Amino acid sequence: VTLSGGGDVDTACCARTFFPWAYKTGVVVFEPFGGLGAGLEMVLRQGVRVSRYLYADVSPTARSVIVYRLAALQQRYPHLLEATAVQDALAGPQDVYQYTEDVIFSMVKPNEQWLLVAGWECQDLSAAGSGEGLQGKRSSSYYKLVDMLRWLQAAAREAGNPAVGYVVENTAFQFNWKHP
Image: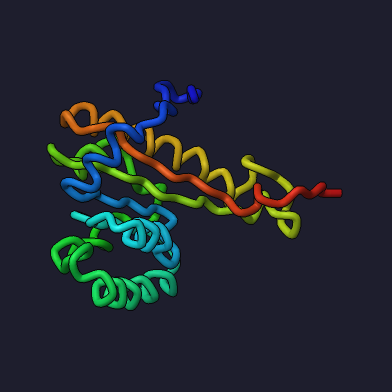
Protein backbone atom coordinates (compact mmCIF):
# COMPACT_ATOMS: atom_id res chain seq x y z
CA VAL A 1 0.00 0.00 0.00
CA THR A 2 1.54 3.30 -1.05
CA LEU A 3 0.11 6.49 0.38
CA SER A 4 0.04 9.97 -1.05
CA GLY A 5 2.05 11.11 1.99
CA GLY A 6 4.89 8.84 0.90
CA GLY A 7 6.17 5.53 2.08
CA ASP A 8 4.81 2.04 1.89
CA VAL A 9 3.10 -0.23 4.36
CA ASP A 10 4.72 -3.64 4.38
CA THR A 11 1.91 -6.10 3.66
CA ALA A 12 4.11 -9.21 3.54
CA CYS A 13 3.09 -12.08 5.78
CA CYS A 14 5.29 -12.02 8.88
CA ALA A 15 4.04 -15.19 10.59
CA ARG A 16 7.37 -17.02 10.31
CA THR A 17 9.13 -14.39 12.40
CA PHE A 18 6.23 -13.00 14.40
CA PHE A 19 5.04 -16.12 16.21
CA PRO A 20 8.43 -17.46 17.34
CA TRP A 21 9.32 -14.04 18.77
CA ALA A 22 5.89 -13.56 20.31
CA TYR A 23 5.82 -16.92 22.07
CA LYS A 24 9.45 -16.64 23.21
CA THR A 25 9.68 -13.03 24.39
CA GLY A 26 6.12 -11.74 24.49
CA VAL A 27 4.58 -9.03 22.41
CA VAL A 28 3.89 -5.31 22.66
CA VAL A 29 0.22 -4.81 21.85
CA PHE A 30 -0.79 -1.36 20.57
CA GLU A 31 -4.52 -0.76 20.30
CA PRO A 32 -5.43 2.62 18.81
CA PHE A 33 -9.23 2.87 18.61
CA GLY A 34 -8.96 0.54 21.62
CA GLY A 35 -12.61 0.32 22.61
CA LEU A 36 -13.10 -2.64 24.94
CA GLY A 37 -9.59 -4.01 24.42
CA ALA A 38 -10.66 -6.98 22.30
CA GLY A 39 -7.24 -7.13 20.64
CA LEU A 40 -5.54 -7.58 23.99
CA GLU A 41 -7.95 -10.34 24.95
CA MET A 42 -7.40 -12.02 21.57
CA VAL A 43 -3.65 -12.19 22.21
CA LEU A 44 -4.08 -13.50 25.73
CA ARG A 45 -6.54 -16.18 24.61
CA GLN A 46 -3.87 -17.43 22.22
CA GLY A 47 -1.46 -17.90 25.13
CA VAL A 48 0.89 -15.08 24.14
CA ARG A 49 2.53 -13.11 26.94
CA VAL A 50 2.03 -9.34 26.64
CA SER A 51 5.22 -7.53 27.59
CA ARG A 52 3.63 -4.09 27.15
CA TYR A 53 0.14 -2.85 26.32
CA LEU A 54 -0.62 0.57 24.82
CA TYR A 55 -4.18 1.77 24.45
CA ALA A 56 -5.82 4.81 22.85
CA ASP A 57 -9.48 5.79 22.57
CA VAL A 58 -11.10 9.23 22.60
CA SER A 59 -14.16 7.94 24.45
CA PRO A 60 -14.05 8.57 28.22
CA THR A 61 -16.50 5.68 28.64
CA ALA A 62 -14.23 3.29 26.74
CA ARG A 63 -11.27 4.40 28.84
CA SER A 64 -13.23 3.73 32.04
CA VAL A 65 -14.19 0.28 30.80
CA ILE A 66 -10.62 -0.64 29.78
CA VAL A 67 -9.34 0.12 33.29
CA TYR A 68 -11.80 -2.45 34.65
CA ARG A 69 -11.03 -4.89 31.81
CA LEU A 70 -7.28 -4.66 32.39
CA ALA A 71 -7.75 -5.68 36.02
CA ALA A 72 -10.07 -8.53 35.02
CA LEU A 73 -7.70 -9.77 32.31
CA GLN A 74 -4.76 -9.65 34.73
CA GLN A 75 -6.71 -11.86 37.12
CA ARG A 76 -7.68 -14.29 34.36
CA TYR A 77 -4.22 -14.41 32.72
CA PRO A 78 -1.73 -13.57 35.51
CA HIS A 79 1.15 -15.40 33.82
CA LEU A 80 0.55 -13.59 30.51
CA LEU A 81 -0.38 -10.05 31.61
CA GLU A 82 1.67 -8.70 34.50
CA ALA A 83 1.03 -5.35 36.17
CA THR A 84 4.19 -3.88 34.63
CA ALA A 85 2.80 -4.57 31.14
CA VAL A 86 -0.23 -2.35 31.67
CA GLN A 87 1.08 0.29 34.08
CA ASP A 88 1.41 2.87 31.29
CA ALA A 89 -1.37 1.56 29.05
CA LEU A 90 -3.21 4.89 28.89
CA ALA A 91 -0.16 7.16 29.20
CA GLY A 92 0.03 8.02 25.50
CA PRO A 93 -2.22 10.28 23.46
CA GLN A 94 -5.82 9.08 23.46
CA ASP A 95 -6.69 10.75 20.16
CA VAL A 96 -5.09 8.96 17.20
CA TYR A 97 -4.67 12.31 15.44
CA GLN A 98 -2.12 13.26 18.12
CA TYR A 99 0.18 10.41 17.08
CA THR A 100 3.01 11.67 14.92
CA GLU A 101 5.98 9.88 13.43
CA ASP A 102 8.13 11.16 16.33
CA VAL A 103 5.66 9.89 18.93
CA ILE A 104 5.54 6.44 17.31
CA PHE A 105 9.35 6.23 17.05
CA SER A 106 9.69 7.18 20.73
CA MET A 107 7.45 4.25 21.72
CA VAL A 108 9.57 1.54 20.10
CA LYS A 109 12.48 -0.04 22.00
CA PRO A 110 14.98 -2.65 20.78
CA ASN A 111 14.20 -6.37 21.14
CA GLU A 112 10.43 -6.02 20.94
CA GLN A 113 7.85 -7.83 18.85
CA TRP A 114 4.98 -5.43 18.07
CA LEU A 115 1.36 -6.15 17.24
CA LEU A 116 -1.00 -3.36 16.19
CA VAL A 117 -4.68 -4.23 16.50
CA ALA A 118 -7.17 -1.66 15.26
CA GLY A 119 -10.70 -1.24 14.05
CA TRP A 120 -11.09 2.33 12.88
CA GLU A 121 -14.35 4.26 13.03
CA CYS A 122 -17.03 2.77 10.79
CA GLN A 123 -19.95 5.22 10.96
CA ASP A 124 -19.40 6.51 7.42
CA LEU A 125 -19.09 2.95 6.08
CA SER A 126 -22.14 1.32 7.63
CA ALA A 127 -25.55 1.02 5.98
CA ALA A 128 -26.98 3.21 8.74
CA GLY A 129 -24.25 5.82 8.34
CA SER A 130 -23.64 8.69 5.97
CA GLY A 131 -22.46 6.55 3.05
CA GLU A 132 -19.44 8.83 2.58
CA GLY A 133 -17.05 5.89 2.88
CA LEU A 134 -13.42 6.52 3.71
CA GLN A 135 -13.86 10.20 2.83
CA GLY A 136 -16.35 10.66 5.68
CA LYS A 137 -15.44 12.71 8.74
CA ARG A 138 -15.09 9.67 11.02
CA SER A 139 -14.10 6.78 8.77
CA SER A 140 -11.31 8.80 7.16
CA SER A 141 -9.42 7.96 10.38
CA TYR A 142 -8.42 4.87 8.38
CA TYR A 143 -5.74 6.98 6.69
CA LYS A 144 -4.28 8.01 10.05
CA LEU A 145 -4.23 4.35 11.06
CA VAL A 146 -2.26 3.47 7.91
CA ASP A 147 0.22 6.27 8.68
CA MET A 148 0.62 4.96 12.23
CA LEU A 149 1.27 1.44 10.95
CA ARG A 150 3.79 2.69 8.40
CA TRP A 151 5.66 4.67 11.09
CA LEU A 152 5.56 1.72 13.48
CA GLN A 153 7.03 -0.58 10.84
CA ALA A 154 9.82 1.92 10.12
CA ALA A 155 10.56 2.37 13.84
CA ALA A 156 10.72 -1.39 14.38
CA ARG A 157 13.14 -1.77 11.45
CA GLU A 158 15.32 1.04 12.80
CA ALA A 159 15.39 -0.62 16.25
CA GLY A 160 16.39 -3.95 14.68
CA ASN A 161 13.11 -5.57 15.71
CA PRO A 162 11.22 -8.23 13.78
CA ALA A 163 8.42 -7.23 11.42
CA VAL A 164 5.35 -5.67 13.02
CA GLY A 165 2.28 -7.88 13.07
CA TYR A 166 -1.06 -6.20 12.57
CA VAL A 167 -4.76 -6.96 12.58
CA VAL A 168 -6.95 -4.29 11.02
CA GLU A 169 -10.71 -4.79 10.89
CA ASN A 170 -13.89 -2.94 10.25
CA THR A 171 -17.23 -4.64 10.81
CA ALA A 172 -19.00 -2.51 8.22
CA PHE A 173 -17.08 -4.42 5.54
CA GLN A 174 -18.49 -7.71 6.79
CA PHE A 175 -21.90 -6.91 5.37
CA ASN A 176 -22.95 -6.80 1.74
CA TRP A 177 -25.10 -3.69 1.41
CA LYS A 178 -25.95 -0.92 -1.00
CA HIS A 179 -26.52 2.63 0.16
CA PRO A 180 -29.38 4.32 -1.73
